[in-house]
Length: 347
Image 1 (tube, helix red, strand yellow):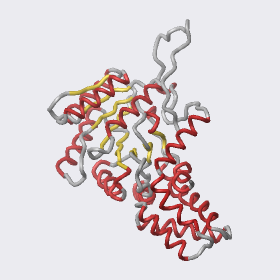
Image 2: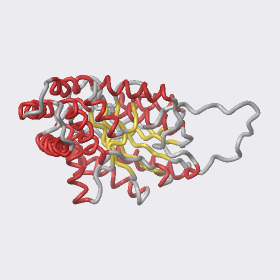
Image 3: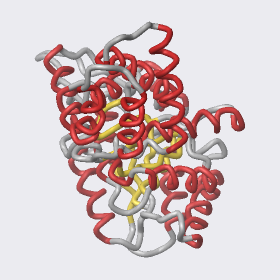
């Protein structure tokens, strides 16, 4: 987990450095900053609270006194209700039964503890690191459907990177929706970073200008906010593909990250979105938002299983870099499988 702390002011009489440190000398954005136990406890409490509706369906399965087929049937139903999906549900049940047998479990509470581990093992493949220091600038293209929390997630990520001394440039490539540009401009002003923005025009041109500006101004990170897209809107998906091609003309190795922001409330539809955007763009990572208040937290299990299948054909899966359980800055944190599984199952 990383902490979203504001950068501390230097103490009085501290000499001002003559030049900014190179990106390689800065803290890694996904490495945890030093944080106290209260900060970590606060995040875990928010995560647990956010997953309460999903957890309530799963934990009541273990209120009985014996391990029998009825327990597994109830668990299967609860997993399906949490939108884990049929494949992931079958995978979890098979693995759980094997663990119960191996550990000679006798009590439903033991099964509950084993379920936490089974889920953590499945979700472990979703852990990943957003390595922005590997490229200068690191060009991040962010996409997603309207209402998923895309622009807000960009703002939170920008503030985190700024706290770690990364020089960020934002690109408002949603050129036809004034509210989107204004929202990103607000985040740019709040984080005191530069932004490339224009009304109307070609989104791909804004992306090209932004990458070019990032190179010229020696920025560490360029984050490109694209317009909201539904994967069923073929012509709009093709526009995203065009933006990606144009970015590559400005910087041949870019975009270095293509992130999809997914609304956790969409359940199995989230997996459909991931598949569609991945097919068009080749995703490198996910940000899952709005997990607070949803009863569909099990959807990450289906994404994890799909990611394992993708790894076999493409050599890598699609990690969940960050999850969000609220509107506050600190509510966007790195995804840790064990923490998520515990919050999902344990009261």
